[in-house]
Image (cartoon, rainbow, N blue to C red):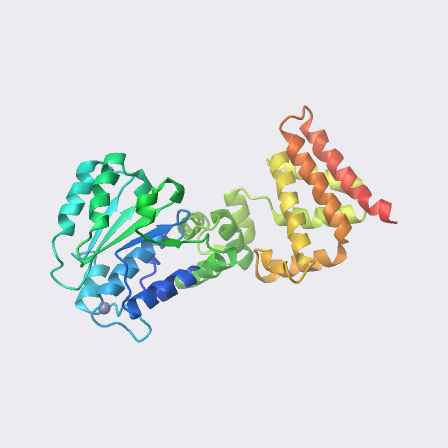
Length: 367
Ligand SMILES: [Zn+2]
């Protein structure tokens, strides 16, 4: 592909509205701007890839926008916004504390803090991975944080909130970013693939979203990787083979077999999984998750805990409908025991097989 730009960069949100999955945070930040209640220091906490730095940049841009929209979004057109978007704004300063964690690095930054901005009202200082600062650097920074000049706003970001000392915590307004929900990631990937004219099955999007484990950046880079491998038409099968994910169809089939007490075919199915190069432990963990997902479908209150959407969701609901709640609970207990014994077991294959046989027998007892 000519001029290929990674999707995580190309589709980086540039307004609050386009940030995915952090609605309560973006609306609080917008309100702070609207009501002119800006703090001098913010701490953005949360796992990697969930939008901390992106939100910090949008916040910085919006604060300095000369022509805010009615909805408190940056206009993306005024001189200040354009300077931000072109990465040539003097109002934003970023320091990655993972690689610049010495006292000198912080001194350079605090020296700049004193200089008021030329255009716009505020200078914003984003310090990424702030927990990586050395003790001495922390101390040097603390002084500035205690008495910041009027025009300075600090946004500290960290994946490890517990490593931030209380004196820093107490001076910051704290925002906890969530892992992004699978359905939200899936939706956004759908939007990106449409814009890129990539035809991709909904189930394939779901697998990518699952694999990304709540991080949008990871989801987009997996997406890119699969596009470069499979081209512009992507099926569920392409994705699971590319990512080495076990097809959930195995679990749907397995549960059907167990319900019919069909031990021989259940064992053959497990054999097929092993033949495809998956390990027994991986298989039994997947089975536990599958049973758990069926259990949450049994109750309308917990069905929201099922993190899949669309057709697959219906598939789960349908299978949950034919499973008895007692069966699911007992089967989950068995697969959980298998999981715990797996590492120490001498004959791992037999352990899994025995567990499957026990699960199949659960339906016999009932009759
Ligand atoms: Zn603007």
